[in-house]
Image (cartoon, rainbow, N blue to C red; front, side):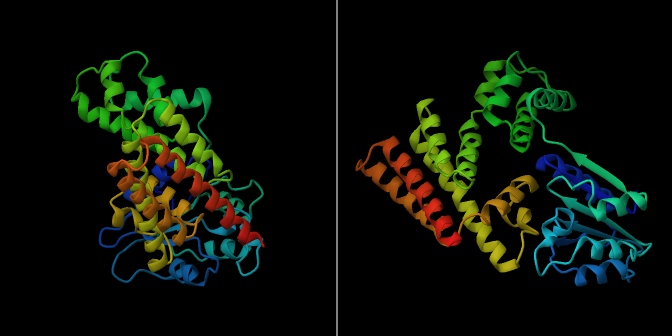
Length: 330
C-alpha cells in the first residue's frame, strides 16, 4: 500500500468508510493504528512520524482533521501547513501515514501539494445529492445482493436520506431480514420503520445547527405525519443521552478517539456525536435530558397531552441554544 494517503471530502460517511478500509489494510500485526485527533501543535505527531518502531517491522499513523488541512491553522497558536509539510519529509520508511479531513482540502493547500509531490494516494469524496444519491443507494443495494420491491429506493431516501450512514444501516438491516429472498415494498416500509429515529436525527441536528428553531419544525412535521409522540420522545431522549455521554467522554479523554468503541456505536455515528457535542454546553444537554424525563412522567400521569409536551420541550431547547450562543458572542 502507499506509504502516504490523504482522504478528504464533504461526504462524512464515505470519508469514514475509506478510512476504515485503510485501517484494515494498514494495521500492524502486533500494534493498533496510532490516532492523532486534530492537533494544533504538531510536536508529538512529529516524534511519532520520525520514530522507528521498536517491536513491529511497521507502524501505522492516522492524523484526523488537522487544522493545517482546512485553513483554520491561520488562527493563533496553531502550527501552519508548512510545518506539517516539513514533518512529512521526516516520515520513517517503516511507517505508513493517513491524513483525514472531513471537508474539502483547498486546491492550493501546501500539504495537499506535498502529498502529490511525494506520489501519495489522494481520495476525495464529494457530497452525494440528487440523482447521485439515488445512484449511490441503488449501487449499495446491488452490492448487498438485495432484491427490493418497486418504490423501495424512494422510501429509503425519504426516511433515511440524505444521511448515507443511516441508509447503509437500514440496508444492512434489510439484508438480515431478507436472508436471500426478495422483499416487497410493504416489507421494506415495515422494516424501515426506524424512520422516526432517522427523522429525529434531523431534529437534533437542526436543533444544534445554525437555525435551532428548525428543530421544532422537524418535530411538528413528524407529529403531523402521525408518528406516536411517546415513541418520538423515547428516541429523542436516547439520542440526547448519547450526546451527554459523548460530552463526558470528550471531557475525560480530550478528544473523540475511541468513542465508537466506548459507546458501542458505528464510526460514522460516533463522529456525528463528537461534532454535536461541541456545539452545545454539557449543562444545557443534561438539562434537556432531565426535561424530557419530566415530560415522560407528566404524559404517563395524564398531566399534559402527548404532542404538547414534546413540542414544548423542543421549543424550549431551541430557545436555550439561541440564548447560549448569544451569550458567547458578547
